[in-house]
Length: 261
Image (cartoon, rainbow, N blue to C red; front, side, top):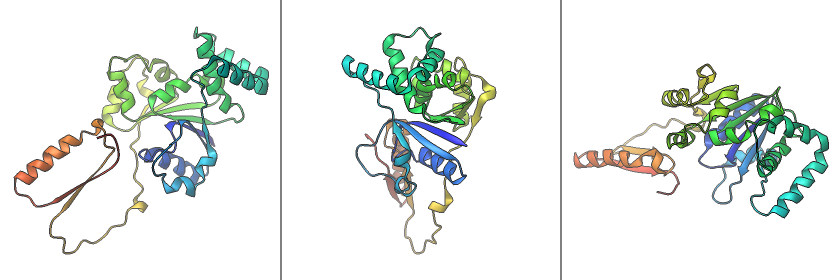
């Protein structure tokens, strides 16, 4: 199958689940293209990105945020390339949405990268990405549209924006998520169709880990691996570690990750 994977940023060192998804599909023999709203500008890049030549398969949405003249020139360039084809798809996508001219042009910027290929599946990682691209289902009605919710995207809905995914949840062919609690939250959101919600845990590749026999280690080592952000509640882990230390337990504690904390 021909599959398009859309995400917020690619590559992203902390989003190994997206990378694993892409590589697994390629190993199964599928043709995979990647679409992202931004590229990684600093820090290390996972070696598998280079090993599988994924950057050559990556397209970045080039939305001109400011400058009416720049937006106009880019829109003219897209129209001159695709002519009636893209206009027809835009009309199909936008005629019932009552969008401003600004929003219609934004849709055209998102639609253009998909004009040169036909995909069996468009699979979005993260709710906001799916919400931005769900209009493609009208442009390409034969293409299945999947979205995976991971966590922060559901927290956005919890913060007083419960209606933000209504269109996405009501129109996506499948809504995947990574835990039972996420399934419950998704099922309660407006537009949700519980029969289309699928729980799919993020897998771990055991080939990346080799069992080692530990000999003569005087004390145990406890390791936390996570993004260093408030959502991971590392302070809970630190409180537990403090309790162990105050109880006289001998150990080493290591935290592995990156982030703002």
